[in-house]
Amino acid sequence: MEVESYERALELLDLTIEITKSGNRLREYLRLREMMAKLYIEKKGRPKLNNQLFSCICTLSKEVS
Image (tube, rainbow, N blue to C red):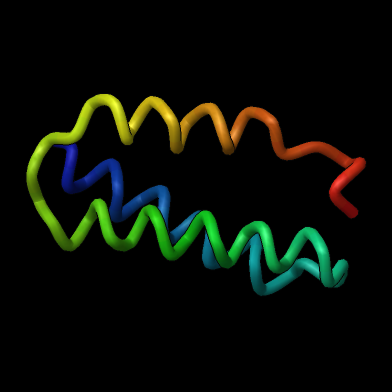
C-alpha cells in the first residue's frame, strides 16, 4: 500500500511541477520530489521521515511564490 501511495504522490507532484511557473515554488517542489523519490526507492518504512515530509508539504504556501 505504501508503495502505491508514493507512486500516486509522485505522479501528482509531477503534474504540479509541469504547471508551476514560479521559480521559488518550482525549486521547492523539486526538492520535495527528490526526497519523496528517495523514500520510494528505499521501499522500507521510515515513519519519522514520512511525517517530516508530510509536514513540509503542509507548510508550502503562497508566500513561497
